[in-house]
Image 1 (cartoon, rainbow, N blue to C red):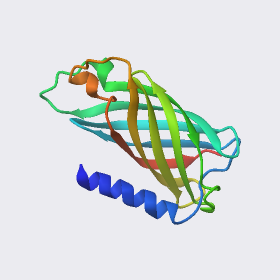
Image 2 (cartoon, helix red, strand yellow):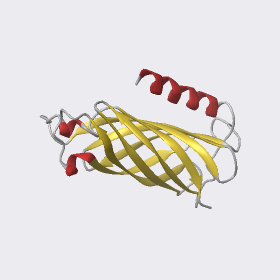
Image 3 (cartoon, rainbow, N blue to C red):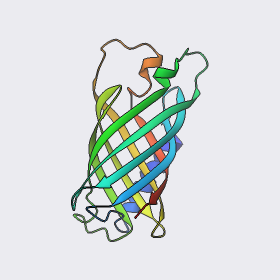
Image 4 (cartoon, rainbow, N blue to C red):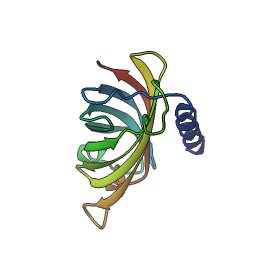
Length: 164
């Protein structure tokens, strides 16, 4: 886990050193990758749509695949969907055409939370992304071990595609 966190932070800082991957209103990005959190890993997908020069809305979903076998996890606890809003800051920091950084807020089936992410595009259509999620307010005070999924710090890392 420490190596994954180090790698993800490195990707953000390297991406921030180059340029921007957000084109403003009408921009459309699809992402697919891995989700890493305590006691499990999964697959994540997302779609972001640009509504303004610096703001986008989107959705992400995550399904836990590698789950610690000691935890009895029903399907409903393995799956989560989030609606989110991002402040795309690549042009604010004058990062150029290939990189973007974006903090944001999200509301999911499990909690209300925040995230910060970064994208770097190698070509017009293909890039990489990394995102860090954390809950701000959980819907339940007392959580079972399986309900802890999606209610804790998580890292998403994977490929990003420009659909414009």
